[in-house]
Length: 377
Image (cartoon, rainbow, N blue to C red; front, side, top):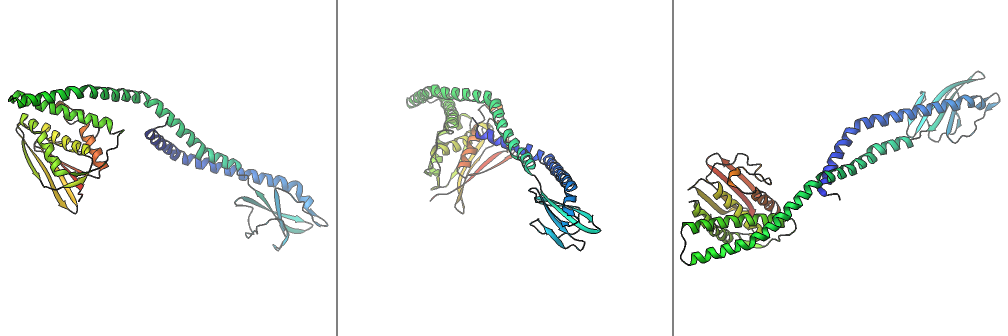
């Protein structure tokens, strides 16, 4: 089965080969055309030799009609005295002349002391040229395209199989984790409501929420390939406040100070699940990569022209390569854990919702992620 991605690669590969074949193909076709010309001239000469005496007789000119060869005969004044060629010959002085699809050969003939000019027309046979050109430009590239696709499919099959095993594993793992996570969350809330809310409970809450964020990232990563997330009218301001409150236990566990500046009544069109992934991944990363007792700034504001910005700024070591962080499975710091899919999910969500991304980072000072999106009234 030809996948779209494999087909695209095969087309690029085939196009490259065709481009490489263009120059040798040009010379090959040119050589075949020259060969056909020489063959045509040879056939004309072979026809003229036995027919010349038959045409020019003492009692006049007698031309036997031929299917292949057409003849014009001129006297010494270049006056046409016999015509069998449909198209007029305007060029008087030539030995051999090519006018597609015919070739013309002219010979001076002396007969009974008189000078005549005989022009013979023969239609070139381009069947061989067309066949070779078709093979070089269409048939061979088509065969290469099919073979490339088959080769790519065979070569990537083991990786597809591994990917399927990984997807199945993640799917099963997510199913198995969902219930325990729910039980942990309920029991933590029960303990908190019973007056037990010490630092250990706080740490358990933060750890459980980290697990929940990771779980939701993987769940979205698996499901977004098969599900369509419909856009909806969302109050970004209220939803952002709700998600910040979710992170309170995580902020406390790392002694992070939160500064939020959220303008009210900022609405947009986006699916809530996608908006949650956008917010959670940015806030989670800001906390994860900020220095202990650092500060995270979260801003939501209108910028004019029907646009608004969602900004998350941390105080951490910064990012060395801001261009590669959105790649799947890419992690700047492997010691911080994670699967390296969070920002890849964010990039895909932004692409699907026409959200512009800007990342600025300064070493040992921090990183600022800015997302510019359209307002909805």
